[in-house]
Image (cartoon, rainbow, N blue to C red; front, side, top):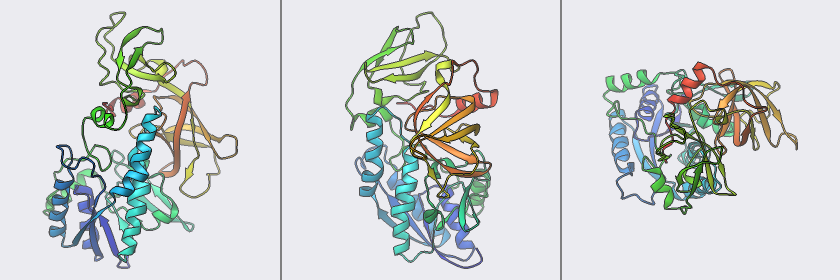
Length: 388
């Protein structure tokens, strides 16, 4: 940007937003840092990091030479994000709160606040890029493929993206940390946050039990063999490996156990042995209404999509279901590992993120005869297990 702007930067206390603020300040913009506090329920317990994050954000603002303000969106977060989060878990699905955090808090409530402060733009430390083309804004994958966060930004609309800036989107994580260290930014070595958006890292099952009652039931194999007891279907997700607590195995196999399904009618959790069990793979994924970043669906139907953040893009044919363009179906060329209701199907055309929708169901179009290739299996295995 050649024109100088008044820009509000979301300073989270992490290295990415710190460097984003430094880059904008160095470019000559009028920069204001805002620290958001969006969670208050258990602010005094050992898992809440917001106090330290605020201290870190203040240290960064001092080094960069910008004003820092703190704002509280806890009420908005509870109403727009956390309430939906609990509803989805109570229904047996696995939501992704980071997506709603971005569309409802960071780029809605926070963006509104930035505009009240007279800001022209809102900047964050997300790894993504923007391109203005034909009167609209395209959301592009980040230069660092390993850190690309377009999966979490795919629900943003044109009116949100037109005011957004992602200053570190053209950088790798290594470059970001190196620059922070060179400039004396105190967060240069701070560990990345991996917890629930604005809530932090904590024993997840214990946290969820505060809001959802435990309803224990059987863990059974596809053959009906009971191999353990679960603490409540809400506490488990498809593809989950850790936290199942299954001891011995009926046939003596040492293959690890995975969650392959839920049966609400009998309150049973279906488990299978082995990462490559065919019941964990689906070729057909159906979703709810699709959000298109451009405002309209793409002209072509052969695209790429991913059902999990860490999975590589996979070729698929996307088609609307009846009623037209209300719900969608993706038919993948290669079966995908553990598509999970409540998570998102995110659609791409090359480096352009087109949009996405909540996964409602997944199945094989026919009895599975194959599985993912080595690259996809490696990627799915490297994804952090959701331990509940």
